[in-house]
Length: 251
Ligand code: NAP
Image 1 (tube, rainbow, N blue to C red):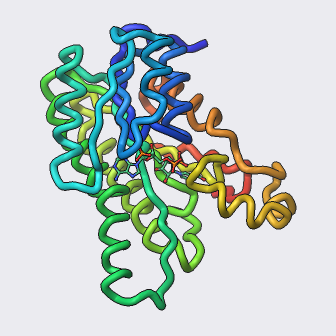
Image 2: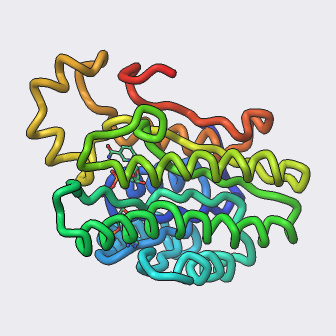
């Protein structure tokens, strides 16, 4: 297994789904992890019990609020004096149709862009300022297949937010490579988590036919990719997007 011993990794959205599994697998790979929890904070105690407070440090904050991403990154740095890898995983995908009243439509667009893009940009900014003083570091942003393929009419805001995450990550890779910064996007298709469960249950038969692998990916596929990228083993891959969609959308 890849060892991340000695690395400090900050993961957002660690309470469930991809973030929870990624946090566990990063810890198993030897990393010390600052695990961010949003509204629920679920899972904190179990991880603390298993790995201890020297390996796992929980932080809490609402990424729909301006300034939270910066505060959380600074809290993450304060734990051990540095962060080596930032994993922007927290995200939302509230369904929204064009016939929603305009105030509701605007509110959902704004919240989605805030959590999925502005907070990601804000924590990337904090990481870049920190990495500038520490000889570099790694940024891994969880995007989506929808950034490339587009999404259903009720998820246009979600796809737009993820498309912007990809271009943000590419710009960071190009602009900051000279300062030792590596930046990657990970673009999953369907993954078996709470975010996707209603859609996966409703469209089970159709997805069995449509997905070449017959089913959505387990969150472990994303987590193992994050561990690989966090290792920094292939620096010249910086700027790349790693697709995890079971060949449902081959670019
Ligand atoms: P999930 O199970 O719904 O979990 C979302 C995570 O984000 C939770 O830990 C949640 O924390 C956190 N979060 C949401 N809103 C937040 C807020 N305002 N402030 C702070 N934290 C917040 O989602 P998932 O499926 O694991 O998705 C993880 C990432 O993968 C997302 O970026 C998503 O877009 C992406 N993705 C998922 C799929 C899929 O099919 N599942 C496909 C492509 C990409 P709390 O619960 O503590 O609030």
